[in-house]
Length: 416
Ligand SMILES: Cc1ncc(COP(=O)(O)O)c(C=O)c1O
Image (tube, rainbow, N blue to C red; front, side, top):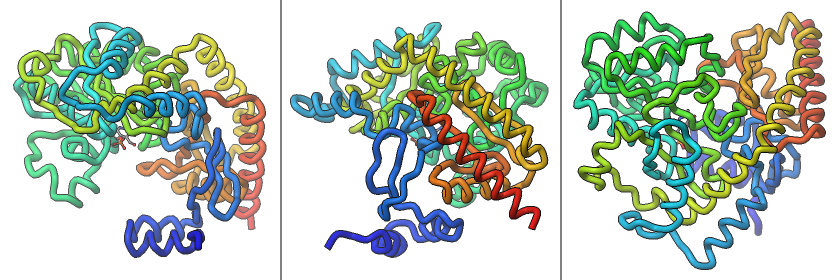
C-alpha cells in the first residue's frame, strides 16, 4: 500500500521531527510535497502550488531542471562522488569556473556539502590567516546550523545547544550600523566580519547606500577578513552573479550554496582570496569532507554556473524584476493600510506588511490560493518572495493575481 499524506505526517511526528511537523499543521500548512516540476510543487493530495520561496534559492532554476538532470545523469554514467583527497577533472573545472567568474583575487574554492559547512570553512580560514579568534556578525543573522555557523547566529539556537561557551569569541552589531562595526573592529582582536549582502532571514534588509563599501574599507583598515555570505543572494538572483558586485566591492571570502547544487545534489563552496589562502598552501588537510566536492555535485554546479552566466539570463532577470515590481506597486497603492513596502534587488524580494505577523497571514492565504511563500523567521512582518530566475510573464501574472486575491481576502477578514 502506498503511503498516504496522513501516514507521512504521522510517521514524521513519530520518527522524524515531532516539533517541526506539528508546528506546520498548527500554522495551517499541511504540505507534503509529492510531484514537483519547474516552478510548481504538488502536495501529495494533488493540490498544486507555485513555488515562490524556492527553498531560499535552491530551486532558482526550477525543480528538476532538465539541463541539470541531464548533467547529473551523464556524470552517473562514468563518475561517482570521487575521492576528496585527490584532484579530479570535475573539481578542477568547477574551481576554475568559480575563479573566472568571481572578481578580484578570489581564486581558490573549498567544496562542502552544505552552506553551513562552507561558513565554517570561511571562519576557520579567517582565523588561520589573522591568528585571531573573534568573529563579528550582524544581529538576527542566519548563516547555518553547524559548529561555527551556529555560534555566529541567533541566541535562540546558540542556547539550545550550549554553544558559544566562549562569548568573547563572538559579537554582534546591527546591520547598516558602521559606527558600531568600527568600534568593535578597532579593538584589534577581530578575525572576520561575516554578513549576508542582503540578510534574508531578517526580512531582506537592504544595505544602505555606501554601507558595504564602508564595510570593505573598515575591514581592510583593521586587517579583518570580510566574509560575504551569498548562499541566498548569489547565483544571479540580484541580476549579478554575486550580489556584492552591485556595490563594486570585493570581499575576502565568499560563501555560496543552496542553488549551487540545483536542488539535485548537495554542494556548496567557500571561495577564498589569494590573500587568505594560507592553510590551502601549508596544510591542505585543514578541511576534509568526504562528500564535499563530490564529482557528481560538481557536474551539476558547473551546469548551474553555465546557465546563470548566459547573457540572456541577466537581461531576463532585469525584465522580470521590473515587470513584477510594476504589479506590486499597483497592489501597494490598493492596500496601503496593510501592504506597506517592497524591499527588492533584482529577484530578491521582501514584501513588508503593516502587522507584526503580517507575512504569516499572507503565507496562509497564499497557500489557500495555490502559492507557497514563507515569512522571514526573524521578522514575520516580511514575506520572503523569491521568483525563479527562469520565470516567464505567465508565472509573474499568476503570482500577482493570486497575491491580489490573498490581500483582498485578508483585508476583508481584518475589517470583519
Ligand atoms: C544565508 C545563509 N547562509 C548559510 C545557510 C546554510 O546553508 P545550509 O542549509 O545549506 O547549511 C543558509 C541556509 O538557509 C542561509 O540562508
